[in-house]
Image 1 (cartoon, one colour):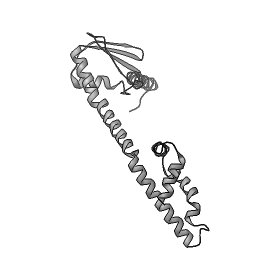
Image 2 (spheres, helix red, strand yellow):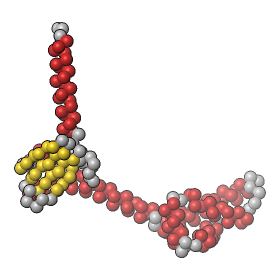
Image 3 (cartoon, helix red, strand yellow):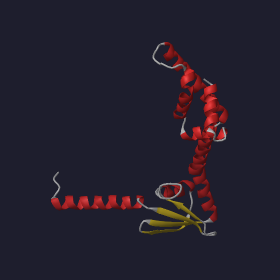
Image 4 (tube, helix red, strand yellow):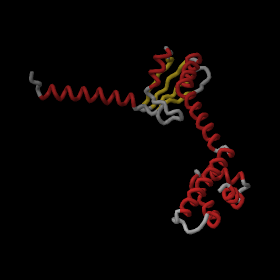
Length: 192
């Protein structure tokens, strides 16, 4: 079957129009969802705090069987007005799907940081590092690879401990020793 040039151009124009209109619908910057009774506004869109794609608004409304009182579209902005009951349902759904998991992830990350920065754990890691460094140095000295014994280089070796820790971990250790680098260094040397 042959397609004439005019018909092919018409098909291309129709398809291009369809794709562009779909893209325009999906490229909404933000959607303002308004509680008509209180005036509270819920913002949905890629540029918003939650980062929920604007295209999800229709999916939420359909899934929760909400009734939009007004659905107004102006360029790349869209506004949907809902009753208070529907607004609360939508807000609860967004909290369950988007906000709660983010809060739980943040809480887990905070707890992991708290455990990582626990001073007793940091001091134990520092003791272990100092012991390993000293044993390694002594083994190298015994093999003739190092000229000086550990007691001669302990001061300088203790200074290199900082590179084993992340900056915030080292700051926590320093804080524990009242920001006195000499006390911290002495602790490291005593652990060797």
